[in-house]
Length: 222
Image 1 (cartoon, helix red, strand yellow):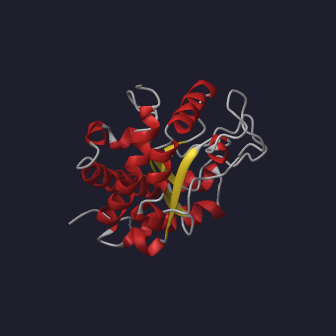
Image 2: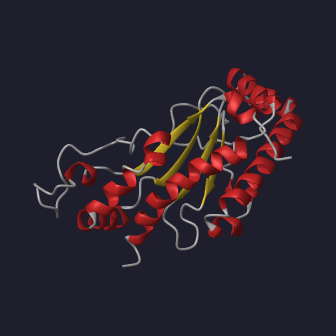
């Protein structure tokens, strides 16, 4: 039987969001350890299924893919010491990969994501050049039925107002050249996390992201 995200894991996160302080966390440290282990087991199962269509993911360490729960508060007005979610990054920035997959677990706010998030300026320019050169292939990926059924399109977070320098103002791919990230997201309900079919269902959604990831990575191997 495939692992699932346990009710106790989400309950721990709910209570942490209401008690985001070191005293409460230390008193509930074993609950955190249990939740953390549950997420690692889930990610391991997910990676196994993803590796069937993206073998590079099978080479990763599930434990190392998880982000630390401890927040860096040095430059933040919010001094809460802990994150109230579990996040796992699969592939992004690992080896030769710029693209990858992301899992976010947070009560009522969980989601699956993939693509390239906030690349460095030099990488961003290469991706934009690839989109400008191969616009038809890029649009074909975005118009695939599975892609459109799973995602509402690319994120427009921090999108530029004008086409960036170095590209023609009338470039037919202009709206996509304004993007600063190339990411898609799929919301996930709490009940979906608890489903015995979660890993299989999520891997199918990630599989529909793979053509986008392949396109984005191709910008660095021409």
